[in-house]
Length: 198
Image 1 (cartoon, rainbow, N blue to C red):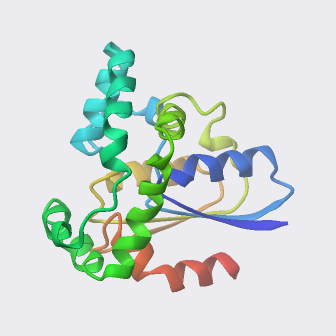
Image 2: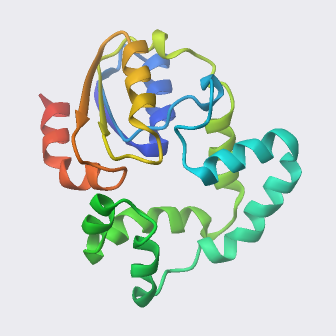
Image 3: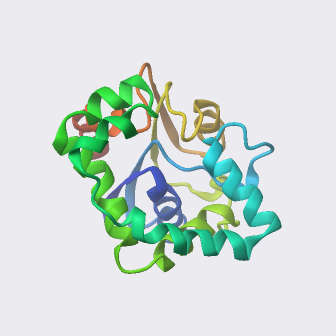
């Protein structure tokens, strides 16, 4: 038996594991987790770039795939330290403040960069998983889930997390005041892990 910690795009995989093998999963902690996008009534709770990608996927999927391949060389590059402040200007202040520390920045963005390194195919496969039906409903995930979300999360609006919390039958919902998509897993990791292991 094991426990799962899923952050952001790891959420669908954690839910699927809990749904498929409930006898093996003791508990799941989802932090700033992605919702089932195919179930959204509107896309307003998502970042504008995610809304545009979903709209483009519906109308011109081949073009979207081509754009992923075109983006790969840039997304796979290590961002020069002198350009980091430019990126941080686009984030919520709570996230930017945490990511000014070089180690925190590297933890958040190095895994994304590595995902793009050899090919865009893996990133495209993940995007398809996020955008299509997962094959089960959240109501069918019966293992204990601790759902952590920040009130300042702009990637997935807090209202989306609240909706997921009502649909998960065994959910302990933690809405953290003033935390954003990146600052929540960094600033509160000790609390999240202590809860997961309790």
